[in-house]
Length: 446
Image 1: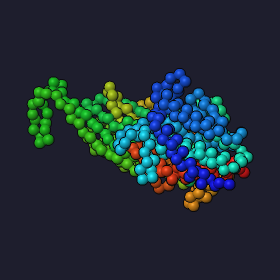
Image 2 (image 1 turned 60 degrees about the vertical axis):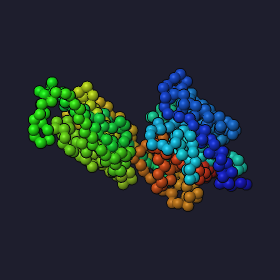
Image 3 (image 1 turned 135 degrees about the horizontal axis):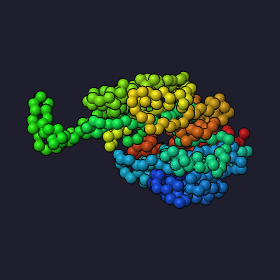
Image 4 (image 1 turned 180 degrees about the horizontal axis):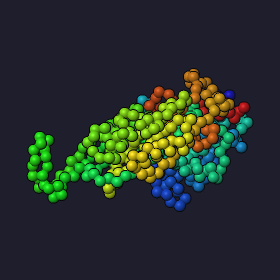
């Protein structure tokens, strides 16, 4: 009987070819159309994957272009959840992000690690199981989503149409096994802004802002036509001008704010704007603090560690100051508790809370037979110790009871996920498929 690794090595170029075909599709969420809930390109990527699964002899199903599946065997016990949509390309690439290229063993392109590469690996793991003569006692279902990057409405819809298998993992996180994910809360607030300074900072709620820009416009007709210079001398001006002040920080994901520097809190600390809303925000969000202690938060637990609280957006428009906060809270706290504290702190400081939404923490028993089988597969293939880890971010299984993330990022390695030059190595594509094949064997051959 051919062993799994040998089979995968023989089909290395087939795997890369399929990944190249998928990467070529710019499967970023687009305008919804009838029959195309997330635009045409995510649906096109799904069609390519399902066509390949069908060609390889698997039973496939397309659930209204929200998600699709490929089955091996009946009555699936195990579900492997991947997604074919991607984030926009952004800037900084050395070549087209939608043309997969190989450099020094790396397969570079948008979606290579998140999550098209792992989806290809999952398919070939299943194919290797079948083609090496292993007969499964229980079925396996591969599920391919198309909206993970924009809220997972694909999975929510799929679950109204089809039941998930009893066990589910997603190769859309990290090894060894992610079994704990902090709760998440996103808070939007506002207040009247009567200051003649415009603020522009942060464009997404889940990132530490790297730039806070202040724009002041001087109109001599409105201000008497005089202004004091930096030496204390008054001078008469006849033309309007605009003054721009920038505060620079370092961007980081909101789940790991300690890796960055918040440009908004840096501006607040400077005292350059002297008004009550700014003073209150400076009090609630001191520069350098990342756990929300000054808001009455600052919780931690032994499993998931310290919580995070990031003032990530602050913008003015039409005499209104708008702000946004990203919070990741420990496993032993609830959404109601955290939202009550942060909303109370904001309202007590004179702000209006416009919305406060989120999800509870996610935890799966690390001692379950399912998790043990995954850890064992990881150890057998890599020779590394398998153990459960907890993260501040959320994965595709956050709201699936008993679900875990299993790969595809290896510990201590940076794949530029969501950034320019995103990649997976060709060897790791094979490694992922072998690890998943071992996991399938451990769970579905038993």
